[in-house]
Amino acid sequence: MPRLKICPDCGGKMQKGRTKFITESDEVLIAIENLPADICIQCGAEYLSADVDEYIETVVDKVVAKKIKPHRELVYRAVVSA
Ligand SMILES: [Zn+2]
Image 1 (cartoon, rainbow, N blue to C red):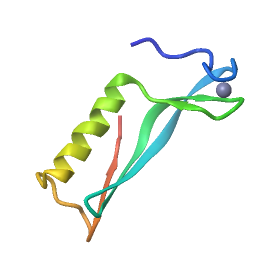
Image 2 (image 1 turned 30 degrees about the vertical axis):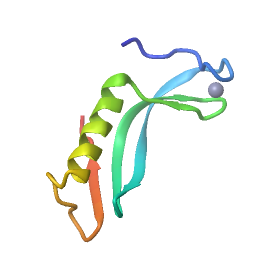
Image 3 (image 1 turned 90 degrees about the vertical axis):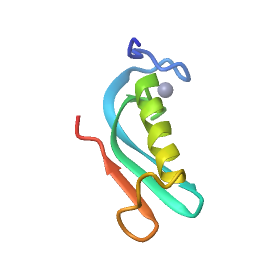
């Protein structure tokens, strides 16, 4: 999937960056940090690639299905290193 060079919202320049994704599901807070994203330097819009979207979905599914236990109490935290 090609990276975005121009922001679809405002036409500003996109920059590679990192972002985090936080969601709450079944009373478990899922926080995934350091996700690669294209971020607009003008309006701050963040776009995740299909791969990253898929990764998030997989993690959320596993936590919801209790295949992976939250590290602490009710928080599952993952940090992407790549
Ligand atoms: Zn923008």
